[in-house]
Image: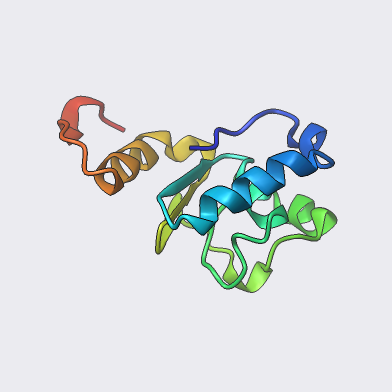
Length: 113
């Protein structure tokens, strides 16, 4: 699970982070990424050919140059295979989908939007 942060750009040159993300992705386990953190997946190449969403403006996505904009969805949460991406304001739905993907037992109605 990758949380977002206020200044994701501080991680742009952290090559060891992108190597780690690729190692995890190679295992084909559930990867959940919210807010600005789908940038990390895109930079690592994990989002190639996959539908996604992100909590960045379209202008920021263009500037970063790592997103396949044709695969961008404006939905609050997007699931494509084992990858779950979400905008920050979709944290409740994101948590529910992530919990289901991990086969956890929980009361979905406990926290309402």
